[in-house]
Length: 337
Image 1 (tube, one colour):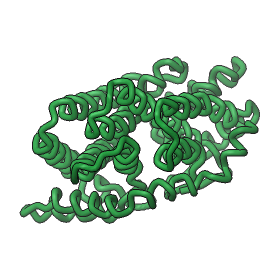
Image 2 (image 1 turned 120 degrees about the horizontal axis):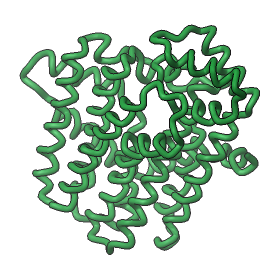
Image 3 (image 1 turned 30 degrees about the horizontal axis):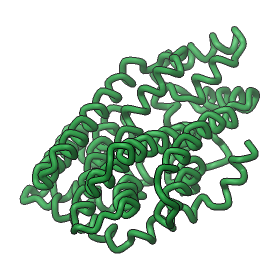
């Protein structure tokens, strides 16, 4: 864990540095999303406005803008349009996720399905995706159209795979990685690769950024899943135990089940078989997680993907843009917001 501790000093700065380097374009991304989500249907407009208000880190948009800058894209506003497109794909998946998971809080605010109902939330997500595909077609690049459309399909498959294994306490780590690769990492991967495609870079550089994004996304999701069981941290409106109450099997539970004795395994199975889990159940889980030092084991797994992400950028010449992307790996592991 020593290297993880050393990374903490630059965590928030790494995000800020990347954001500051593309701040002018990020403002235009926000404007593009707002304009694209304008609707004559009153309820659609209300939901769109609420979605924009609740915001987010725009990390995927930053990846597209940052990778475009790294690759020397100077030809206009296509990076802005596609960064907005990628953020809208992300927004749509969140709306659908919240319905599937019965979530009532996201980013510290009520979810759209909690306010307007599941049907409106699903259709609003579909509306975002429809607008995304309009933007992809307007861009006119077949490679980008193929990349982002296949990415959307993979995200949907990841959601179904997670449903298929819901409550499966003895889930293989391999299955978990497939789920988070599809649900999270593929969009990070696409966001980073778009910059190289826009700049007409060679295949090696496209693949390097694609690999970087994938491993950054895996790190991000493992860290996010681990935070759910880290009682010492309460971040960005996500309450401790949220995934647990929804019955999601994530890396902390998978590693805990591997370490637990027979009696504990039996109890874990019983807890996740229940339709509703109590605060007492969570307390029991947290004690076991502490007993077997599961949090540190999860971060150790994440470090593997951090190293892969950082090393993949070695193909690019040293620059401020490259450093910003390299440093972002630390933010994805132990961000504080």
